[in-house]
Length: 200
Image 1 (cartoon, rainbow, N blue to C red):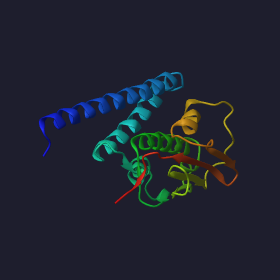
Image 2 (image 1 turned 90 degrees about the vertical axis):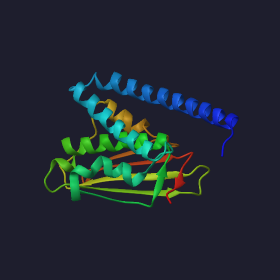
Image 3 (image 1 turned 120 degrees about the vertical axis):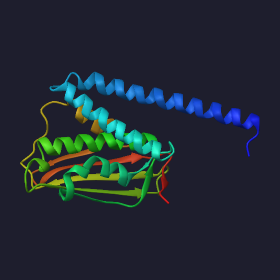
Image 4 (image 1 turned 120 degrees about the horizontal axis):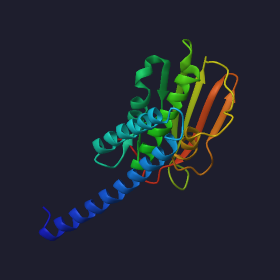
């Protein structure tokens, strides 16, 4: 049982943590709004990204504020595509920042694939894979998105906010890799998970 002093200290700690996370979340929303509303159609892009962010917050809250399982974040983003998107990886628990970042990354990748990539073609598919490298200074997750069976893709002529999100939404030691191969677009990122722990 906690004493009165411990309860007050615990309440104050939780209040400061909530304030910190709220400020961070509002900063992310402000950045998304500022960039998305400059796009065409900006309003739709903004609300779709906001929806992806909200779904990630639901998972984080279900994880008692500590984060979410990678598999849950992936399922949230690609469930509507059914068997056209397959995924595999070990049970990994993402810290809140990584869960939020991957939710935005997956939303961008799925949106682009549905509009311009493999999911815009009836025969197209996507394969997702991830694994953990526990030998690094901080636990690191390697995530790969591979498209197949879609139209020929080419690098974008200008860098939009979606590309910026794919580059910066998760903390990385090296820049993500974009490959516009004739076989299909692929994306790979190695993200640092400072608070990562394996799922039970």
